[in-house]
Length: 407
Image (cartoon, rainbow, N blue to C red; front, side, top):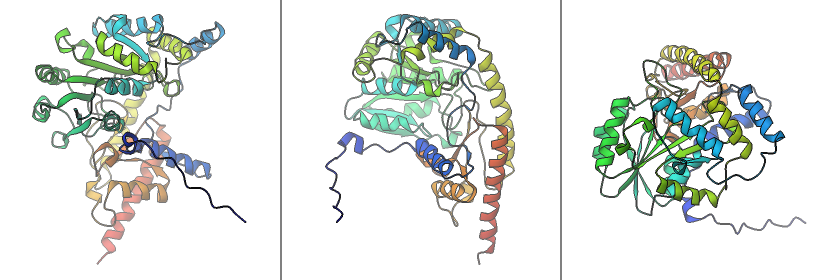
């Protein structure tokens, strides 16, 4: 006789129950489930470079292991990785930071988490421009804060100073900026970014600048870091950076934060009771990534440029789909509103049917706060892009045929 399973006594905390699961990870899991079933998948869901980590970075990690750099490090990172980050920002952007203002983290995501939870109290408002990276509002909710969204569709998903100023209230404590943007790929021009920062400083609002895609910008747009702004505009600024995209180091889990000594001290307290320190071997690899040859970055950007051009042209040929030109990162964020309203009502339904009928994975824009859009990652091969877009076009043609057949 089978025993009835006992009901679970586990109940997640109130903070966690308010959080939504990651839609980008959900897309990755859907693709993996198909692969496990033996299905060939055309996957544009993951925000992960298809390039391997450059060999010079791997060699630095191998040497670190051989020389015994396998122990705990200081919470903020080794002196070598801190200095490499400081030197990079001075070399590239003329910014001067001290060791008390820099810390290594387990990926850029932890830098953002540390910064939010060390600052936000229950009831504090945090401004987030739509569309947003899926983690931004969930970390705010976890910290007890209130996400307040800035609509940017009317400006082609490009945030400006006027939009920011209108959104600020007496309860606004923080804004999270992301340029180049995930998911839209839009890049805030340096002059506009400075205007936004002037508004925020005047109103006493703290800033997290997520610079995960810092180096992946397509001319004539410019590579820009908030670190290059005058010191008076950086007094309430935290930069969250990552090695994952720039150096194809997603699995290494290596990032960093740059902030005032007081904010950094608070973030170190959070990290000291969570991950303790970033992976010691990854820290040695990160030193080589920043100090070594940058040829791999140039090569990857060149290839992303080629893919971007091809993808935008291919999307333009599909009736009902329109797309702003992404100036950075490696995503297209097309509108499919022209295809909705008939058989399919939402972008989520479109994405689900596309997986089922054409084994092609995209990410629903609703997860980024933009219903009616899809995120398509072109951090994949041209062969995958070409076949996947053929499948999307075929799927759209079938929708059109069904619509025409309806009385």
